[in-house]
Length: 389
Image (cartoon, rainbow, N blue to C red; front, side, top):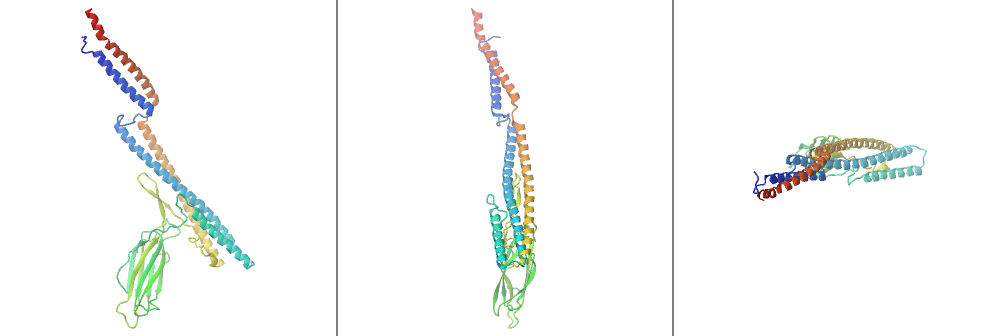
């Protein structure tokens, strides 16, 4: 039935036109952005997944940047370690010349002065091996850590152990000894440090007390910061009573017990979840290698010290090389993960431009046809007027 009130053909043509226009706009958006899913209105689920994957790719990019910085730090340290090793070899060559008894005093003094200059060169090289403010060849001391110790006293037998966090360093031990003989106040046995030993203590005249500042006890493996150190250090202090007159109170108490730890590593981000990889310090300064006082050493002592320093320097260079290899593998892994995730995001949201180009042309044709149909349908009321002429 034909009607001027309801033009079904025009309504259908208008619907087709609007549909073609909507599809054409979507095709134009996909072609211009290169994305099939550019927002939540395209595909909410796919867009949400893509956003999470993009965050993962960004996290892996951060990991790669962190590993690249760590690799640069290690590369600079490796170069410094190589130069220090060469310098130590030169020092050994110079020290061997001192064994020649035919050399005059002036010649020996000249050789020793040259050795001292080479020792200074070691420190200059170690100090210069820095990247981004991190220098793996220079020892760094972390804040002092109080160690667990019994309070009160004095006690004739002071036997206790203190837990350690594993970081190597210096234990500062300070005791008070009360009313003990000056010549044989007691004995102190320390275990768990680098050189376990038993010491004889000297007291003070009666009545009296004496502070025993035991100085610094080296703890942990200073040649290898990756080593596992003892979990506890034990102190066994036995005090003797002053013989005459016999005091009512005698013995020892702990005045101070601290650890001055060395910084063993800096953390390097190795995974998007915040996991870290330790980048270890390998100190190689002259003092650390035992060469800070070469002028006072005999020739035999000097040769022995240099030999030990060369061994430690070469071991450190090897450890730095192992770190370099590990970082290189981790950097490759980070890059592979980032590429895989980026490819996955592309597979999920990228548009197929060849298909979109064909769709664009088809949608343009459909829009034009719908417009033509709408024009024809709008002419129907004029046709109805002809029936009444």
